Amino acid sequence: MAKQITYREQEKIENTVKLREFLMELPPYVKDYFRAKEPTTSDKTRLSYAYDLRVFFRFLQETNPVVKGKTMADISVQDLALLQPVDFEEFQEYLKAYQSPDKKLETNSRTGIARKMSCLRSFYDYLCKRQLLASNPVRLVDMPKIKEKAIIQLDPDEVANLLDYMENYGSQLSGVQLYHYNKQKYRDLAIITLLLGTGVRVSELVGLNIGDVDFKNNGIRILRKGGNEMIVYFGQEVEKALTDYLELSRNGITPVAGHEEALFLSGQRKRISVDAVEKMVKKYASAVSVKTITPHKLRSTYGTALYRETGDIYLVADVLGHADVNTTKKHYAKLSDARRRSASKAVVLREKREN
Image 1 (cartoon, rainbow, N blue to C red):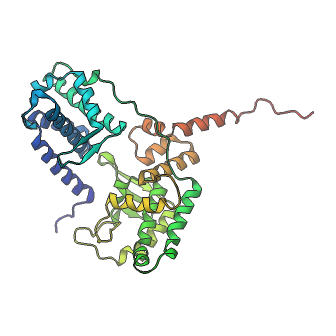
Image 2 (image 1 turned 120 degrees about the vertical axis):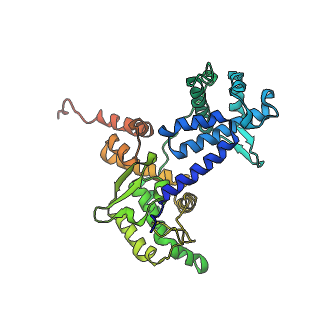
Image 3 (image 1 turned 90 degrees about the horizontal axis):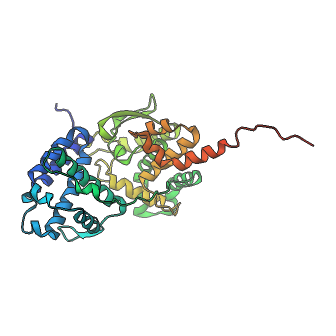
């Protein structure tokens, strides 16, 4: 019997096929760039880069007279050598709003523009390293300034309200709505409790199989960014939510062929998607908070709670799967500052004397 392909393996195959489709439209030296990037980047990152570079080459087709009439695949390195810093500044302006080939309006925030420019800078660095270009004009262009965003998460009372609301939401429903709520109640509670109780990424959650849950040690095996396996441990609340889901819901469902191992199933009895989880979180969270809550915000809620309880930024980085602790420090800098301020009151040099 052939070994069943895991969710992550299937996702990697799909990303690889999609990347090849993108590269068929682009010049040969772009393919060489992606071949060079493969050892140091994930399939998701390479697919994102391919999308960004395709947008850049389309921009050249639309706006640059030098390549007018050429297909993207025919744009040469010599054509790129003629571009000046001002061309890349125009590209940044273009990224704010442009039409995709299917006539959809695409927009980018400062963060999105910065990411695309970072990809372009990396691409030009590669061309210079291979001595295909003499210099990298992208490095002469100022990057968009990214404003520091406050960490958005649920407060402790909002977390309790969210879980209470989910448990009792059925009392407001009847008929078909009540039927669907009861059908997915234990699944939805298990998903949100797992996100809040472990801080896993939504992409990691949807990839979980039943066999990844170890109730003996209260841990789940997840595949982190970069393909590294890790055991994330959970507490009693997560254990109960998962047990209830498996015993009262999941074990009574016959999944569609190919989805038998999936821990969380959609209403169609297939592995649940990231999009479905995001919509479910938004539906419930909007009822208890005015904040815009996503699965990532639930991850931030966990990270914030863990740091406040332990004060150990390295533990938080490890549990959240941050490859660089500086990423964690950046996200939780304000909390670190608050802890440092509290330290000023922790040491008393002289006790107040009673008169």
